[in-house]
Length: 377
Figure 1 (cartoon, rainbow, N blue to C red):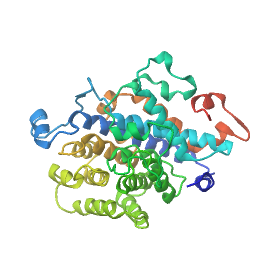
Figure 2 (cartoon, helix red, strand yellow):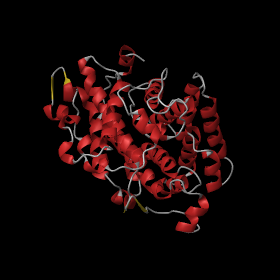
Figure 3 (cartoon, rainbow, N blue to C red):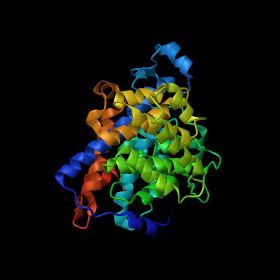
Figure 4 (cartoon, helix red, strand yellow):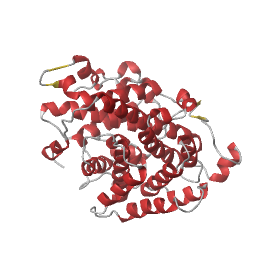
């Protein structure tokens, strides 16, 4: 979509105090929940169920365990999700300039993430990149796949018409897409479109792109107060108009049907996730969020299976956090979560920008501190 077309996504909604508090809780829940699910799955990512049980007992992994040298460590999935948030805030700030094209702002944000993966010290980091790019813990390399490094490796932005990595259909693009669903003032079809366009920057296969879009729409629905089942049905209705949607639609329908097939088991989650492509991982995450007795149970289901544990955990955690808010997340896991202060600060900044943006950078004036945190350049 062109810059002019994105103007239709702008909203001038007035928020009541209670609405702002609920929204902030759901934003915090989505970002913290995704990070907790990622951290829970990181130690067992890529392991088979038998390996997990051999390492952690018959019930599998039940608590945070060490990965990358510490408990509660996150992967590149959380890193990129945070840069999605940073890019969305900057997109909102930049709309005042008339140069508003959110996918471009997201591409710039992801390029800032890529810069953190280089060999340089804190004194070499460019100060004009805003505060997030100077958070030292984000400079840790957490095994990003080649598709991400190649997709963001130059200034040419992938688009749906000319995507990067045309055969790539992994779940990484979907796993960074929860923030798009937090744009509650946008119409669902525009949330879908933004997630699809941003996914094309690294994941060119239609399945990878549409799975990201569908996931964002589901997050959007539950953040607005819909039931999880209702949000999935909305995503299915929007997908039906998109060429190449059938694998994603079939996977989501399969997840809904699996809910009625008895008690959840690791075998069922493994079967839903399939070969680890985006549509299967999203479906498995949706299933775990639907059948989980609480957040803890849903996340344990999401990581104890023979599939992509970190991505499934991150996707399920984002859904559960957006659905129930931050207070439903296990406090013992949050206490050990890597980067929790940064995640909370960014979540609150996002909520403030989306609810009170005109007071920060509007016709009546601007807050210099805000523009230093989120530069328009």
